[in-house]
Image 1 (spheres, one colour):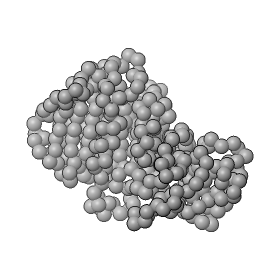
Image 2: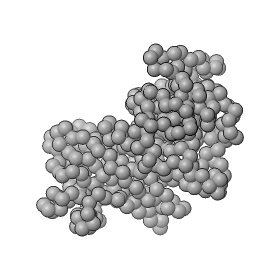
Image 3: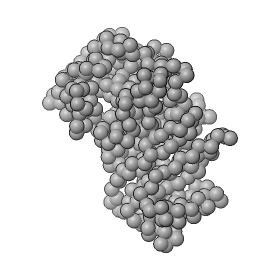
Image 4: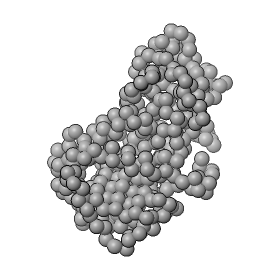
Length: 387
């Protein structure tokens, strides 16, 4: 049996953690579905565990009373999927009538073929939270990526579940830290890190946790992470309701997607790494507009036989190309960021040497796009074994 242990790094003292979590874990063995909070107040009162429904009311039930608590507490749930067991933990924010989420960095080790890590945040008090997968660029780290992009703070403020997986350093990548995606959104090597399998394992487990909306799972990423989103759109289209690559939109020439995939892409027209008009490295041949057009054709969009037409967006220093009237309500949209380089739009501090940062709020635009796209019930009915 493969045992996958997710161990959450807490902010509490070791004594408090052992006191509370020890009791929680004992209860978990005989009361699956309990939620455990590990705060000073719960340790003192001995009330570490409670039912998940007090945190996440059913859709037909209003939350009449918020749990009282100290600064933060943790939920813990053990999930078994086939022959895989997983203990998942996540820090939840303070509660109150007007609670404010505060993201606490949590490194979670996951055993696939070897230990892999991810950064996990689950919002509290949200019945059906959307789940965003966020993938960093080459030689970045998941925790600094969610900080640099502002995705961590944005997720906490908007009730979004966020998981940022850590790429691997591999000889297949010239010892660079990245995800397994090369030319045409194919894997670099079949012997390289099994990143798609890593995503599948994490997703299957998180979807067993309470309060996650299976129809609102999304992918965003930067540079190499954006290209990896393009690969996941091909390999896991039955799970991802939409994708939003930044500086990384590609089209998989062997597209295995089984449905139209709504796509929003951001790209600076002065990008020195992945040029807007293509003709870059071995993995970056076609232009970004051409990649968008190919996605539009795949999505069955109207006018997709024509190259994209860009329209200026007043005051935002960008122009937009949009294909709509696609299958299943999908769209294919590209935001061309005037004068911007290889940067996350709206980040406070750009990466030196990679050009200017667009002033638009990329996170807010991604959020608006994702909020308008859900996975249709017909897809869920077609893949009941994945629910």
